[in-house]
Length: 447
Image (cartoon, rainbow, N blue to C red; front, side, top):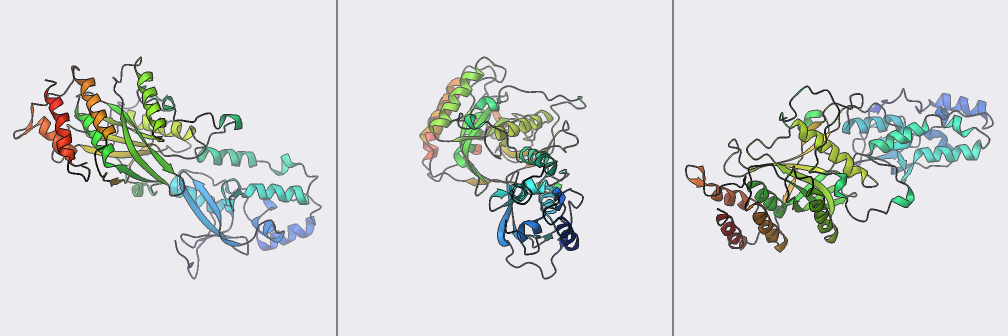
């Protein structure tokens, strides 16, 4: 964040075609002189300069903010009613110009910034200050006419921030995560004309390649990776699981602390509700939130298919809808037995999906690679060890159980390959190797 703005700051006039464009100083003075507050001041005429002159807001550093899809932007309100973006020192003539510029950094397809509904002054939306001005100086005005289009602005802003209107009495009903909001084990097909095989794999883009930045940070526990990798190695069929953790809105950090494998078949719709309810209870008891999901591509690359992209997009929307604000949903793909992997370790791919353009809502979203910080745990927890044993028991008699004694390569058995892959997620306590030997012995006894 630059503390000193450039000597010749760039003035940005994006959004100048929106109806809340700021008037020039001469226009502002002429309008106020002609109206004398007795004539009806149009919605377009209520500018930041008007609010400043009448004392409803004051200039200040960092008093303006925008929260959009997990990203926070901070601005200074200048004496002349213009806005200086703190991070770059750019000067914007109006709330719309600043909001449009910032939102397009996150979502290039964004057509407008909805400035007065998006920009907050000391935590309160600017549109509320506009309404206060009208009540104070033009109480007899027809508010429905003066605020024409404002409801559209506010609705668009709430939609873009992933918020869902929830009645007050319903806001506290969900005291724990509701897994059916995502329903990983129940595929949903989006309505669109099929033009490609839904199993077609798609290369991931980088956020920088589509002129965006990652809207949140992610930290993943090594025990999460170890349990997930172990689960994905057990069967030649696709497996899925949930990710539990915490979302910090202040630091914009998503911390993934626990993996919850689904011990059921993807096609077993009868068993799915009971399995999801058990995981829901486990999340609740540990004080964790649902933060994502994982699945395997047993013998293929760890890249999302078109079906995975649709699923991830649905999960993102459902997880956002279960809270009062933006919360990211992390997707992870694990590819354990793809011979294109480098070495014996599984390829693990964290990803997120950027929504399709507003004008083409039925298009596929863009899958992007998520940068993740991996945090090494101090030791292998009893929870993780018990979960591994339960997984061994669940798949023991499965027809698609991997044959662990078979050879992965001329000099490496599949069991040795699993050991080597899991060693990449080792905790700091080296005693984990002896602890896992008990699990490996159970794998040998399955065949």
